Amino acid sequence: MELIKYQQKYTDINKINIDLLDKTILVNGWVRNKRIQANLAFVEMFDGSTSKTIQITTEEKEFIEKLNTLSIWSSLSVIGTVSLIPNQESKVELKLVSIEYMGLVQDPVSYILNAKKMSLEILRDHQDVRVKTRTLNAVFRIRSGLSKATHDFFEMIGAKHLNPNI
Image (tube, rainbow, N blue to C red; front, side, top):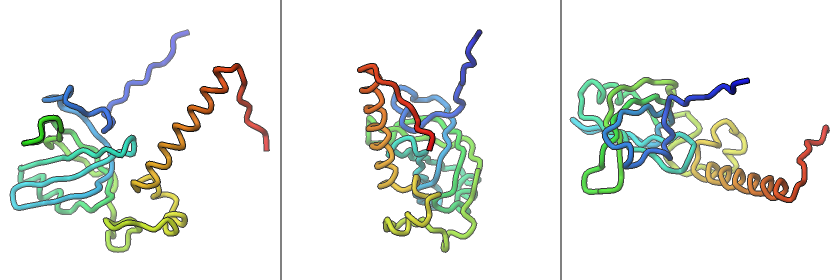
């Protein structure tokens, strides 16, 4: 019996580094911040796999016009070429080749997440957006690491994990 192999088509942001320089990659994620000038646009994007973000840049007018309609926390699928950030020899960015909106925030004014810091009480009421915040994303990664370490320890000593039928 042959196992089915899964080939991921997109690149996680935490795996983007200088080794991918000049390669064209696909990245999916949410917009954390954007800055648009007359002939240059910057979009900060994250995918939840890490606290790291990737900067997406473009100087093309058609992309800049398309990015003007973009709001923070919208989800994107971006194809771009990995390049070095000027004056920062070890950091990389994506030069935009193609962009597809996966989900736009229709009313950014009333959307629960904004650029300001959110209180934990508000996030308790809106569980669907918790993973997008830096604080709870970090808590979830720590919790996942602790859970893995616990399971690894008990597996190492020969114990079996059973889910109780509640």
